[in-house]
Image (cartoon, rainbow, N blue to C red; front, side, top):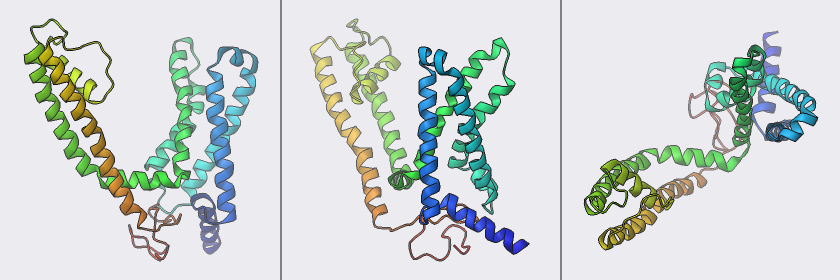
Length: 271
């Protein structure tokens, strides 16, 4: 019985967590269709005329999709050897956030809670985040961002210091010109808006020196925007050199193993 149960869980694990088999590919395709339908229903519900005419159909569709997502969530927990690692993983929390709001709505029925209920209903849009699991390039991007987080953190700290220095300088230049630079924090806000090329226009330098200084801040902003892109791109190039597959460890849920790997690089168990 134990061996049969183990065999059943392994087969289920291959279907749900991997996409190398025909059954696994079919499972992913069906789940992708359900995700798109779920997000579409959430968006159409916000259109008042459609909600008045097709509200009952939307509700039925939501319950059917929620039930299927619930079954999927339970199966994902059952077929892994370390269920808590999945439950508290990023994907596990996303799956729970996409499924739970419909059930919570059953317990919030009074008039005072209608606003909370609407907020919970909007949380169902989290189903769109389930798509991340099925986009292979996103996995490489996530790993590249994680690998470069130390460099990006140092860079962001330098940007914060630069913003404070530039904000202080523009305050000294424009502080008495009645152009909106009434304090250093407000001047720092202008620097951030200018460097990110957002340019709301609510604050603008009025003096020639201030306008020249603004030009320098804009040029610096273009350089700042390019740096994180270069850091992540470098890590992405390194990721491309490593060939991985869809094999997911049953013990620790670690994905992205080398094609020739026989053991998990995270926990050392057999794949």
